Length: 192
Image (tube, rainbow, N blue to C red):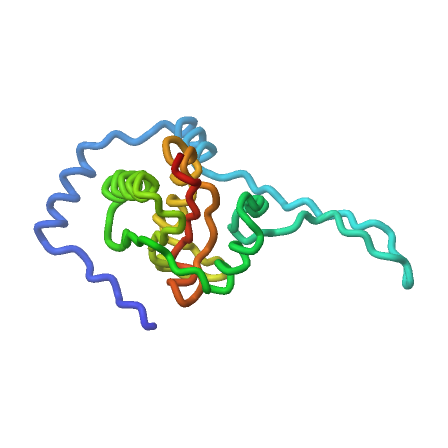
């Protein structure tokens, strides 16, 4: 990339600059030094890391913490439902009785819609519902990937908080046949 030469000042700009320059009062020498010291950044040299003594054949020890690369470090949710039904869910062999698609909704639209849908499905006696959130986009910036699927992150939290936590038994990622990473199976408690 070639740099362009500065264009210089037009005559009207030169006249304006001359008026500004003539109306200013120069700083005293000691004030210049104070301002210069305030503007200059002190040079801080990085500390040299001290490495422990190491000899060939010695077992290495790591003090580094595991890096989750932005993923939640939370453990998976414990299983609250029947193991056989859970295995069917994971294999995609259980058909959802109802489904809701939250694509294109804002958080303010999606939360009440999800609440109405889940409570309505529970009232009607449904046990397995499918909530489609979409995968969300991901922006790759250098080495890190930032996921922008806000509904994908928020929906499980909404399902685990009041008033939905009283009717939701389990939340599981959907099988590829039902939307994969862009959807959740929600297994509801029995309506009593």
